[in-house]
Length: 554
Image (cartoon, rainbow, N blue to C red; front, top):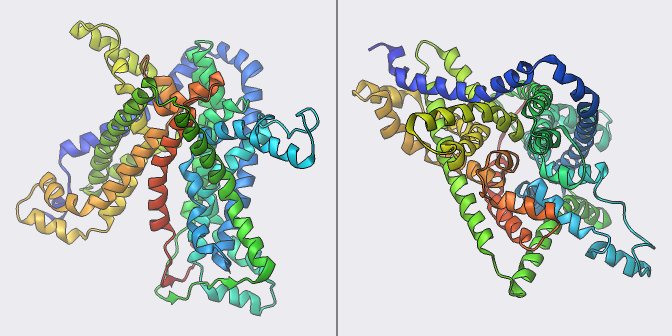
């Protein structure tokens, strides 16, 4: 047995990995076929009436959210890294809490909180001595600035998380050298710390903008017709699948640009040094500056998490106190949500394990295996609406063939929710693939070689050696997929079977009808589930480094 054979996966593993990669690419290829197969003439009305306004709204929304998340995320990350003030130990992880809030839930909450006859404006009018909304009212939240406000304060943790990790690893002597050369603290930040953190900021910014592009609930609630909303309305309202595919193709150009931004930022994020460097020690603030720092760091947490969460708790308890209870429909939606999330988790983790293991056991074709792993992880960058449009045509064709072959009625796969599970699994496959690849990288190849020399097959080595060691990575990936599947709205709206509601679609329907009776309970359940991965992130990503490597940026 040669050294290469000790690593090589069998043809079954390689074929399965290749099939998964093709499955991830299939929706995009179908989308292109749908968009261009209907002829160029159909693009005319699209360019004349739909794309300009939707593209302009999307560009303005992305620009506004991008500026807001950069300012909030970078500012808070630097504040809790470089300064010590009351509440810092709590705020350094609490600043991640808005990640537990889906954007459509925050929009849902603020539409009620900031309503002209809602509690916030009522309190302001009472304080100013006004009696009627005609005398005083805040600007309408249903606007582009309102959408930027909501999305920016929910999505800033992506920038905060990457920037905070980068600031924590910057050695103290760089800032001290800048101060010795005459720079002020502000000058040292802008001329030393911020340039070193640019790659991390690019990664966090691209993730926040991908989430903005994927958003459909908040944008629609707030009256902003983005490309994602245009895809949904073109398909559902006008029943124009080709038109929806054409708009989705336009979205893919934006996705490609954002992925390039993320990849470019990650490419320059490599550091290496054999020296152990002293991390930066936060400067103690005193007096009013200390409390000002506390208020500044607490404000994003209050707006992005605390205020909408307290509103949901209050509305849910009020509903329960009034004897309304929980309807059978909401309980059914909860059951559907758990079943969908469990199915997506099983499929995504199993597929992720196959892809990661095939990439690990590369044999004589390492480039092909790595390519398949990279393709399998692309689904997270594709918005849920785009995936849904791309999956619909092949799913309908397969369903029709299946029904004819076995004499079944209706659409067996679509009706059973299989297509929805596949769509969500494709979208969240990047999480288990990345986690399991990282877990495998920590296992020395010598263990695997010893197992193979003792006569174990590739599958036996995976089952008896690697799986026990991979349990933490698999559990983390499964948890992230489960929670994201619970929150997923765009793909669920478009691919769910008839009379099948999840908590997300239940809340969407309540908000669309303007009835918030049980929407708060559904939203609270989603937020409670979303807190679990945030706790994991806070523990894994923001731990205090005892000794840090010195950087030399490549």
